[in-house]
Image 1 (cartoon, each protein chain N blue to C red):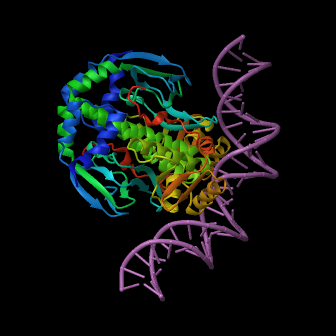
Image 2 (image 1 turned 60 degrees about the vertical axis):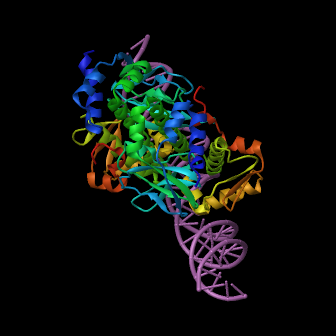
Image 3 (image 1 turned 60 degrees about the horizontal axis):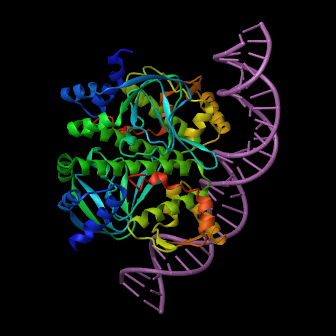
Length: 243
Length: 243
DNA sequence: CCGCCTCCTTAACCTTTGTTGGGAACCGGC
DNA sequence: GCCGGTTCCCAACAAAGGTTAAGGAGGCGG
């Protein structure tokens, strides 16, 4: 795979979300990345492991999830190209959750050693990466609100709108259609509801002509009603460093 | 207030949780901190603001929360002495949630400028602080699981056990009793349930002689049953840097 | 000591979501 | 093109949790 296409989504994201100057970009481009193809549904890192690398999503989708003792699974976040879902493993040695690919994906592995060296050398890059983990936490906070306070239809609407906004940053959600390759069971795990209820909710939003979710794609049918339902305020995404 | 008592809980926490050497400790002690008394129930920082300082809890309790457009409130985390609940504001300029004191508290304000200077000068301290924000995120992840997957009684049990474990680190939870100064309404906001249901759940755990929550204190009546109910696995707290 | 306010408590009823169990549609591999 | 496994879909019933309403206990200021 072409070197440029590996770094492009990451650099695009970081430039928009945090701001990078030329030397920073050069330093990141100098990071050694081991690119690998990954099957769908395969664990990238598992709960309890001590990874030695961070994983950059180059192409594809993955999720982070935790499984309770009684076997229930909660999806914590959905990750898209340009993101480093286990950046936290740099300073939290032991994983407290799983990371799993949703579709066949291209992943780039960056060693902790090289990332640590980079952060020591370029405090500016360190801050940008730190900021990435802080945005991650901000998204978790909103996810708590979503699961804790909103009724199931709003939960789904909110999650859909969030994913869409994040996809826009790396140019993957033009028009009214975008990818969300989760099965209904996984949607349930993300929203904290059963797959049966996820199905009911999806059906309802389809019947009300708000969104149509099928075969891993979302089609927005009514922007106004969707916005109303999701009550989405994008401030928590911190997509603008100057705001 | 004595200078030492201001830094003590923070240093104790950081030493245990992340490990600090002598020069690091000295550097942190050199941070200028403006100590202030705070009334109960008063906002420390509000959603939308751009703080210029971080707030260290010296004595007391505070919570972080978000309020939805329709006025429902979700408590995101409970903070205890030694913690810096808005450390994220260092690189996330605009607050996406509120921080509120629960009881009359002693707070220490540390300017962003001095913290940034410290992190540039002492990469080791930067890593320890970064790690703090990562642990914060790890707790959010578990909070998502709690709200998303567990039935209300387990949710309450889990939250209680978590708080207790964290209080132990700064020596505030010896024996079977500890402080948790939330009203039943606030407990409901933390667990994503209504105050009426929070009352039902508290009553049930009292009747089953598992825990007794009243007047802002928790008394553990049956360690075994509590552990069983909470399904608590403390790995996500990352309280040991070497584990 | 009184009155007010907050917090706790409870009951009856309603709504959302979970459970169980089944069938249909789709997809990839042979 | 068929077969077996996912995934989707749906209905009937059960349970958890939400709503509304109202009384009681406790603390604090006048």
